[in-house]
Image (tube, rainbow over all chains, first blue to last red; front, side):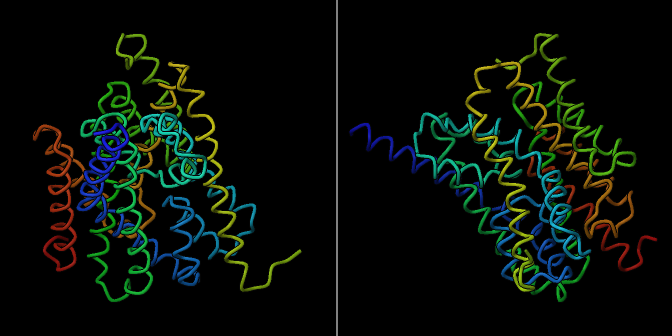
Length: 244
Length: 117
């Protein structure tokens, strides 16, 4: 077996594991979450094409909701741009930390594919990278992630369409139960991080986020991220628990 | 310059796309450079974890979506149960999630049909 064949087989094997992991809870969670977005977008007066395009190209739920809410309120372009940028600001630390986990540089897949890889990175895919590292070798994380995220991406877009057209015939309690799943799932996923500093950051962020929300509103994400993240890394380094 | 009426939603959506895509591209540009600076890289990691956790717990406790129709105890109890089961069952995410979902569903249905007031 040549190196190329072996690499190709390893790539496909890792991608298959990612696809399988994508089915089940993550797809269900994203599908149901996007049902909520589909319903919100319809209420906001967006047509189905803009609604689906928002899921496809923004691909970050809080920013999508901010966009639909503000569009409905008749907000101007600058307000929408700023609100969405703030709501989706976490994409920056997530891509900075997530892309090296995929050994993106070593795969040399070209700028266009790198851009697509970065675009598809949102909370669920990013949180899953923690699990991926326990399941596939380091060079398998990228194909694992691409397999995983393609399943989740399709499910999310189907959920958007479903929510847009069918939210008024599905009983409200059912949608409520479905929408509750996503944040719960992601909290459990990030709480299982391998590195102590990251687990500690989750704990601090989980306390600071809701604690500062009544005072800071949506800025609480920044307080949780910068406050919790900084405290966690400082304590980890001071106590010799820094990641290796 | 103004957009024709039917293009306004697309224009606004375009701004939302750029506002998100910009962060990702910045992340793509910075990822490799930061990887060599251990402390900075660790910090960005912990910030990402803390930010995501803060946002998700905020959504559970102070939701702006349909789950806001459930009273606070109905959202907190399933969250606590999910964490307890996750912890007691060897950090099993799926068992924690199912336990939390069942409690939330029971409370939601209980209120809907008047078993819980």
